[in-house]
Length: 299
Image (cartoon, rainbow, N blue to C red; front, side, top):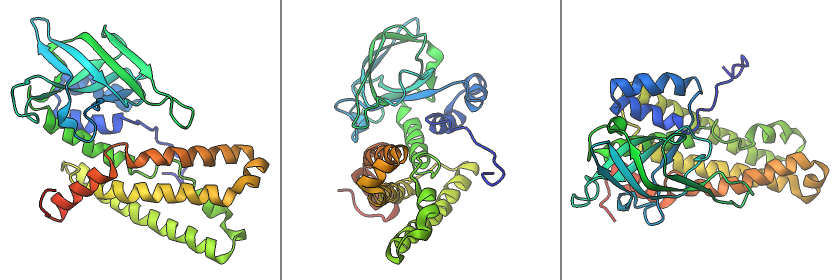
């Protein structure tokens, strides 16, 4: 498709929302949200992480209380990408504080534009941007049909979402790592540097094959599974190595001579640092691979 000049719109967070709605949403939810999302008319954000519940997501404290009107949400989320521009959000909240912590969670859909009581505060990042946000819920009312899956069964839906998030984050089209620019400039470089670029190109092809396998699994109806963690681990390191080499080869003088290229290279390098945290830290992914792929005992 790229060779034919066909551009595919980046659905961003919707890329991992859509599979969860297909798998666990009601017919009404699928009809309401999927066509508009796939057209690019609806943007989404993910309301999972909290100040004390990041890697240990099941420790979250945001509460959802059932009322005659639906559900009342109270709590705080953090590191929410694109919260200020999103039309809707996917929210994980605790509906049963007395149940085992993985079983007392429910997965909700939130209208970020219309729901009253939502306060969004941007967080300034090292890049100078504010992609991430804090989101506060002050007695926010959600309708009864905002639940995806079963009440108390949100952890299962969330795992599907998180698996698809890792697949999406590992997609080579997700981040502009600058590999093609490196290849284009490699002719005038010495043999050692060309070998480094060649190794990155070979690695990219291997990752593309892993990605194709993940796509075929999804098309067949399978959950992303632990394979998504393997791909994210390898892709994260790959993207960081490309960003580091791009900045190294450009150098201070190159950044002065080509300001636009210098700005892109620096932004790519700084942005690549977050990849070992976003979508599940490297340490968490290593544990997932160890336990679910290699069959090692829990640490």
